Length: 460
Image 1 (cartoon, rainbow, N blue to C red):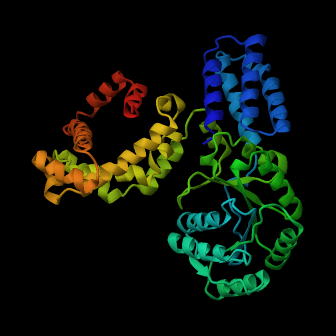
Image 2 (cartoon, rainbow, N blue to C red; image 1 turned 60 degrees about the vertical axis):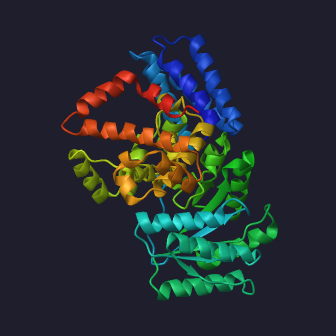
Image 3 (cartoon, rainbow, N blue to C red; image 1 turned 180 degrees about the vertical axis):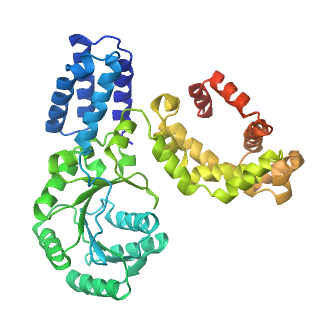
């Protein structure tokens, strides 16, 4: 996400860190580069002006000039001010207020095509899994019949309850019936999806105002598409004037290499950014954290998010069994498939690399990452084409068996050979873990260099 901004700022940050002495000239040059990077990323001009004034004021202050490492101190200033711009001072960012008598009502507003219905499902999944809430969803969109069916399908997909409605009812009738059902069936949260339009119009605003007055939701969230550019901020302002918005959900952040306008939403509207959509998958919604987002934008990665993701997706029991198996010297193709499947569960290579520091990912570009994800799926297909005995004893895989596996997976025999070579590499690495050889392995990896290792991984 925000690839262009990250690339530009990462280069500037690297230069800043290397400065043993800050002069007016090199400080001005670095500030100019930061300003251009933000403007190219579509960050709102008034926001950029305010941000640059703050950075310049602090860059020439005692904190930076009096530091033993002024370049590092200046990086810290940029990081803090960028976090403030996105709302690190707001205690509301990344949080939902559900402190009310059940059901807590969350009203979703936004233009058509912004990803509102998908966001209802993603947020319902987040509430169910992270907050342990019983969720009911309902669609009040009577103008687009497919919207009701879409919400039913995605609600079923994420495992939350859905309240049926139809186009012959009024939005007020639907909302009233859904609220009554939620109360009688002890739901903790009622998620209300509303109608969107291709543009802001009086009729839509009047309808959603009426729904808001009727339901008195504890949270009114505005869903906006990051790819709208400056229009994202303008649309958020218009909705905020019509409704007392409590937060913004920014969707499709993975689809826009600029996306900087989105970072201006909190500063321009005063409405906190609460969630960001980072993929089309139902688990592709993250609670927004300005400081962690800043680290990612500056190319410093978000290792904490990576650890949290691993904790959520790793099957502890399976991992313990694998550890015992490795200790006994065993690691077969079924184990190899489990490991690559685990990577897929964590969002694939692009998602993992997005959270790693920039100096580790410079060898990988978006095209190569996409190819890596496709290759992982092909590898899974090849292993699935094997018999249980072949997976347990890869030495059995001679020419005729390889041809059968290639045919079953729809690939060439060379691809089967490549996959087996990668398996052998991992198998050898697992053998090094056996008998306390981990330290030696880590030393070898360090000598090779992490960046070089990753570079080899993504060669076409």
